[in-house]
Length: 273
Length: 346
Image (tube, chains in turn green, purple):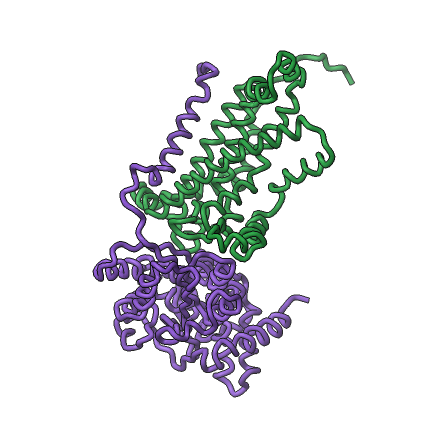
């Protein structure tokens, strides 16, 4: 066997591997996605606008967006604080807690819904004491928010904690030596470094909340014009055989998610990490 | 693409998200709220009621209420399988009025303390708002030559059936299938059980509600669907039915029971809800039901809809001693304990 002189490897041609990837993804992802748009626009653009501008579709989209914004905002704060505590403090039970806060992604969302109902619902463990006071979180927007906060909690944590773990403690300590308080150190040293993680985590949380179904269907009561989110609307319309209405809203959700992930990708790849 | 200044990089997403937030929050912003929200009736119904209530009964009642000087009234509604709706009510959804597919769901509500026992019996017509017989939908031209429930037991017929756990319609269908056998042949209970076992051996898909089962069938799944006549003739009226309706000679007329959940009605809404409940039995509402394919509790109104088919020997749940006996006897003992065990794979 003659030794091949070590030359620069030829630049790999992309056509074949890209072709294979596309071929695999076509039936798995691309075609189902395309079907959403095909069925959304089958009746023409005018029909698309008509079904989309129905009062219920508009309510469902707006309600979903508001819940997603609220979920992202609350979990941005809660998740960042939890990540900070888990990253900076060392205490007994640190590991179990670290595992527990990540569990929501692994639990079936239906279980999340039922356990929230059994806790906060009118016949729930805590809910039965709230009910006489006129406080009823379930089957109301608050219940939907609670479910989404639970389901999306790990995303913020997952985006922020690795960054926090990476920031050298010395910068923070340097801040303390010149007399910074914990808050000042966090605000001026840690937070600027976290911006990318915060952005990523918030958008992931937002996107997941926009598409949440399993827990929402149980805790919302699925009331049209009150607690029906966009995914619930899609399901109800599809079950009722109104494929055009279901797919119009589905197309909007898909387009929104595409934009969100487009921003995410642009932001993360340009940070030059 | 030319590189953006780092500060400006986030500008496009920021503007986009701000616009999205503005769009979402628009109806709730203080200056865009035109007037105070009018009183709202919260209505839960079983799956096939969605269109008749949303497009028919609610708008009609809004007119009546305005004409009587009550002003504006809104409806918040939710539709699902009757069993699902019942479970939601037990879990405490704020429903004020619920129309259930079968009386035994009302019994379950009473058992759970949501409504008083037999409270619906004090409503007009013992709480039954409308009816519809159970029919069989087959592929166009009826290629398998199905005429009755007995024909569904033939090997190779693939049946789409709603799930009795969550669907009221499925419970009616079970009694229809059983009754077709038990009332048709001298064998009585044995013959009924044989039809049930034969039908359920051929069930290839179970959906959560009658509506969901119809969507499955519409999407090309199965050879036959057991469902409410209303579903079929409402679809046919809109030119959307890609199926033939088979009227079995012996089948059940389902009766749909109204539950009024007093504990969810605030005192100031009481008159409104009571008026709405009374409206459901008015000629106007009953005519709307007929127009959407339900049979009226006053059979003389049924003549207005020529789409109704004829059934040789219809029967009612009362013929089996009412749901209080039919549920334990037919659904629990015969269907669940015997038929489903018998046909379960070993």
